Image (cartoon, rainbow, N blue to C red; front, top):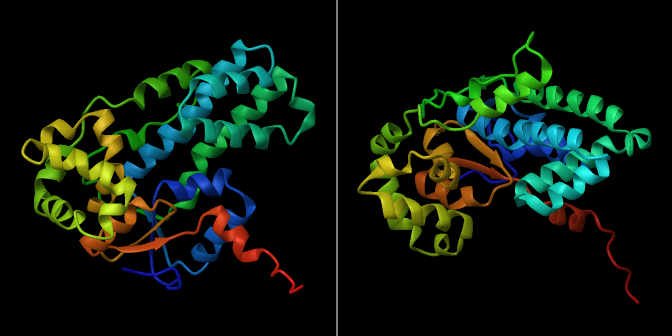
Amino acid sequence: MKTNNQLDGDYFLETSVPRQMLFGHSLIKEEIRKYLRKCAQKWSSFYVLMEYKRSVVKTLIDLYFVAKEEKTPSDALHYFQEGFKTRQNKIILSAIAALLEDSEIANDEVKFLVKLETLIFGSFQYFHDLIDKYIENRTGCPLGKISIEDGTPREEAYRKFSEEIDCVRRCSLDELLKDRKGQLKLLIREGEKDPHDKNKGFQEALLLIKSAIGTLDVLKTKTNCMKIGDIIIALEVPKRLQILTFDRGFESTCQILGKGLVLLPSLATLKKSRAPASQPS
């Protein structure tokens, strides 16, 4: 498994990387760029693109429609604080923080929506500009190709995108899992050993795979697909590529499967490494 000081070669960008490049802290962005500057080519997959569009683009579109209904952008923020999931909240909070850097739009719904639309299209294009090549779409996931149609009235295009990005099971995930059944059994067997048995994110996905190993077809649902997403990504990625990620769930999967991994540090770790050393009293 590759370590964080091996910066050469091609990288496979997992979903957390473009998300952090778009909305992350400046130290996080600086750390990612350190790796990308020495990267020969940046790869990803249509599965990752689907995850990015579902978690970023669709969430921003959800924010757009909520902001249209609420009296102020502030009320839209409070709505999301009350009703949405943790990852959505993080994206929404990051997006609003970026938008509200312009103090004029803090209480101006029209200006807020205009800037939000720019962010929606910017986030959509950002992934495509960041990635050089895509690996073979072994999951057959069609959702990475869903787009916001030009020439269609804006809100109609948003609604259509939100509908189409929802999973309807028209993919080959079950075929990929059956083809990789030997690797799944290896993950189950080795995943019970130290240190993998302490990797919470990995164990949650592994528990689901273990329960379905005899009937892998049951994993071909939106909910199950999301729960085992990291393992799906690792199964698709060729061994010649190093997976670049902030997600520690990949540590065990990649080590067991012999896949290259560069695990990026958290913001807390980066801040700690840059903190001035305390002076002796």
